[in-house]
Length: 142
Image (cartoon, rainbow, N blue to C red):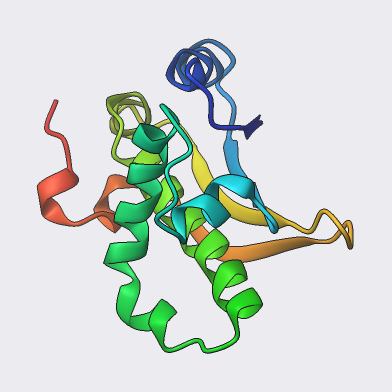
């Protein structure tokens, strides 16, 4: 299953995990993402600024690493990657995913990035298959 972020993501995830019993969820970002690019500057573009703010939070979490990258294109590409990694962890923190793991369901979350120009997919080697891979504070008790 491939999940693209949109407002119905949790209902799609719930159906896929609980009804279809899928075994793999792929969070796939793409290099050249306009949302990531917008989050890298302070220009207001309207109501979407509220969505962009969450991406800026991810930049803040990884600011030390990202600011060390001098080449803007390389920094942009790495920001795309860390955003995908954080989104994989965000899915792992949901009650939908954690409940499936609690019930013994085989389910692995993966992070990939697609190159729009190259057509290549980069596996970010982030694969989460149990809530024990999360910090204790995120491990839900059912």
